[in-house]
Length: 390
Length: 199
Image 1 (tube, rainbow over the protein chains, first blue to last red):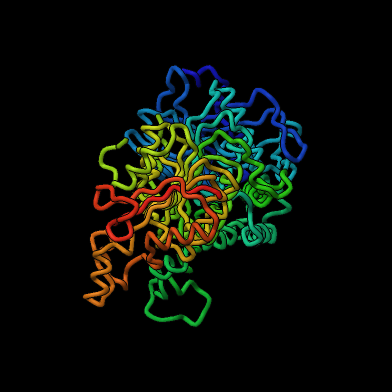
Image 2: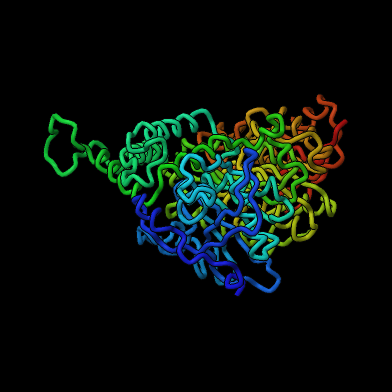
């Protein structure tokens, strides 16, 4: 219906681009924004492309829309098969007919963030001015820019208001940003395992990842798309380091302990003797097949720049003054990437701002990743939060 | 009473809360009182609860409940953020009940405080004759696992608010679900509910 009225770009990846990265050339649902996208840096993207997926019927009143915001390395395939990996959507147990986010009743939209590489404009996209990929000439984007691009997409889809905006991790940052920047468009915001700013430790881990990518000779200053070589090693190492931050010591110990990988004894060498090494190497190398190294640089930068209190002289509460939005926050006790203290800081600010907030710290051994895993406790309270007063 | 199925002290509080008030329910449990206030009185009611399972249950009911600890997290609320604060059956579990009372009346001009009366005759008998910490209907847990770390009596609480120059605008005493008179409260009340206000 609505979507058919929009400009659909048949083949987003040009042959040159497809050849240039290890990313498979795949078709995404996309629109070209009908207006320029102004960025927080002052730069402007003339006609950026936004790739998105939607699920479930949009009702007559158009008041049953839930926007889901994805995390750093996730994408718009929240409830449908990933076109590259063939894996089910990353939240397909949550977003489904009759599910916690019930696609029989809600119209769910999830857009690939600006700067990413799954169909929305990013460093791997062709710069219309030059005919070659932007690479490092792509402007630096922010979490605010991601939300702005989503808002413009929704404008174009004819969706004025959201019943809910929901996200975990970086998705939670976007959900918070939505509530702060577009309070009149959001009824409720659910922020899971997230924070209102990137801490020094968060920035530090991201910097390790970026330096790994940029230290790889195949990165070539970011201009690797036409060379046939991509910074496989750098991006793998970045992913390996980051992946550790998504887990917990208890989780790693339970899953791997000191067990050896397919061998009886240590080899006295530097092969992947331990299961945990083998696991991390696999995580690193498989990531390269589905993610662009430059996108990883840009999105981690966007997260590092994130601090909702920054425009308010450090007073986070001022970001939410008189907010009519209902806020729900969930943290996990073993998440040391975005620990409970960061969620509490948001709750304190919401109290100070007089906003309506719910918050709970759930117990899980799985660290930051817990929000993506089976968590019936989280699912129940999500459902309650989404349905409340409806 | 306004809502069937409410614990007697909660039903009594619910009946006293004016419609449309901004209310903070501290130690709100799974949100039973909050839900009753929301549904019957259209109050803007928020909750604070220490137990995550209870918070999750309240969130499932669509209530705005924050997981936290009365001793530590009341400081996060601004002055006069609410019309009424409710502290039901939580005073005796706090580390510094006196400071919690101060916080209640900073956050709101009025507060309901309910607690089990440790001077009830069964408690007195258990101590006097048994020589042991009492286990009663309202204090059902042995001394080593009870969350009640500051047992308080009706007289103790009266003394505390007098010393703090806090006004008592109402007091209700319950023996089971039956009211008990002021004069007999010290001996006969299992539960006491005070409505206190800034002096």
